[in-house]
Length: 320
Ligand code: DGY
Image (cartoon, rainbow, N blue to C red; front, side, top):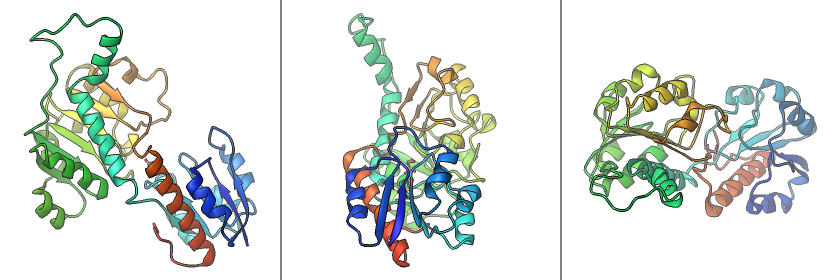
């Protein structure tokens, strides 16, 4: 019988599983609208055997020191950049995440941002509402065509491949950059694995779908952004820190690239004084890459199942 700490209010589907489980003696859900501070987390987990962690809360050595009875950490996210997985494993703490159940949602959001940026939808919507639209003109509101162009996918895992799969119906050529080759996806999608520089030079749209790791932090810096076509659009639904955001703002402002569609940022929420806020060639969303009832409920259920398996000492359904 174990105490479980849930770091944020999560969909009922997950809470219900935990509430009704014989493995759980006490369920504590952090009730506030904001995430607990590191001190609050340390206090809350002192006598817990399981943590259902929600980003941006971090599981690091200091937190693990404060939770000596911990058996399992289940992240309600696929990205585990907020979790020191090695530190957990060293202490015998199992780690789980929520892959697969959000793949299609995140790929859809990448496409929503790609299309909105290509067709300048948010800028146009604003002008229609404000009465700044003077009527149809052959030379107004030109966007950029998506069909029959080239998509470059940075990180060709499940989500990157799902983004590419959608591109097929737009007749796009697909390039990808990934640590390892993906021969099955290559034959399914006709995708070609290339070096990152070659991908950036050739792509009309670049979708960032890699995990944030030491290798990918700041991957798209000023020198890499300079390789992109001036007509190209960059979309990021992975993690903000994969891109040097200050360099991106400069590239957008000086029209070194055409636009960007961003669901994730180096600092979230995006600071009010971010230079991105001044730009009309960027479409931004508040990290909604998995934000539907169906997907978030599936994530909550999978995170809860990871917790329960960990408490039983069984292999996790979605181990990291
Ligand atoms: C994920 O699942 O990683 C989402 O981005 C939420 O952090």
